[in-house]
Image 1 (cartoon, one colour):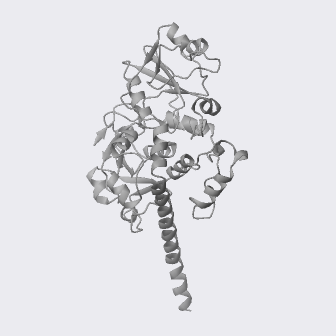
Image 2: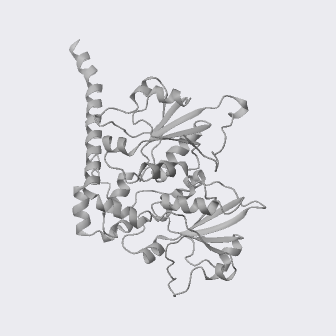
Amino acid sequence: MIRNGHGEAGGAERPGPGGRRTVRVWCDGCYDMVHYGHSNQLRQARAMGDHLIVGVHTDEEIAKHKGPPVFTQEERYKMVQAIKWVDEVVPAAPYVTTLETLDKYSCDFCVHGNDITLTVDGRDTYEEVKQAGRYRECKRTQGVSTTDLVGRMLLVTKAHHSSQEMSSEYREYADSFGKCPGGRNPWTGVSQFLQTSQKIIQFASGKEPQPGETVIYVAGAFDLFHIGHVDFLEKVHGLAERPYVIAGLHFDQEVNHYKGKNYPIMNLHERTLSVLACRYVSEVVIGAPYSVTAELLDHFKVDLVCHGKTEIMPDKDGSDPYEEPKRRGIFCQIDSGNDLTTDLIVQRIIKNRLEYEARNQKKEAKELAFLEAMRQQEARPERESDCDF
């Protein structure tokens, strides 16, 4: 079991309000390609109790029931650990959630989203805890899923940034891959996530820098927020005894200018929530300027500016985007020890394209079979009742 020591939910377990018994909540899952939908599920689960324990499945279990994961189990353990609402992580959690597991970790109930999770043979993984009344449901975040993100990465086009530039290749691919059970095709080319001020408020800490805290500024795309980003931010967070880390996120057009291809995979609003969910980040600048200006440094009273070991691309006028913090002597390059990039993740996906397509199609087929079985089960008593009269 991995216990967290940072962020809102970290540290030793505290008693519930009014000194009542602590309510311990269990969540589990693959948490492959962790995104703001996963974070939102864990945020909702944490709000239902006082202490959140998250079980993460092994690579072997995921491959058996769903198909090959994108990230290794060690990467997935650390990604979940970095989410600020998580108190403890349980590695190698069983794929089927049982009362034995809940009792082992003294959890009152488990929480899952309102989507279907099935075993390789089509059984509901939460059947036992549902029947025992120790299951709670939270709302699934609309507009994002791991399947959706994989689909975006597999499309070698800029179409997901504009519905007006959908190529014939994109249309052919969209028609053949990943149709959801209702026949609606999720690969519309544009992210379906709708940002609201309420969602930002739910994810934001709402805390301003306090006297004695060191304000550290970092900037970038933070696209497909991943373990490479987490390792970097953890290192940055550890530079000061009382850090206040501000992450500046560049506009989509800016990212596309220096990254090219079909980047960013996630739009600015999605990237904002992903970064806000990280326990090492205190604040996010939405649409930060590419060059770190004197005005920005003065406005946020920045003490230190950090950048990783990735190449620093010049601004559009050819200037160094870190010229001002370097002039002030507050620039620092950080080696996170992790060379994973968004490009490498996309390469992982493309390399295993056929496997991922098969995984997603297999998942959808199981869900359809399960829904049909449920429909038939619900219809059976009605037919039997009709025969009695």
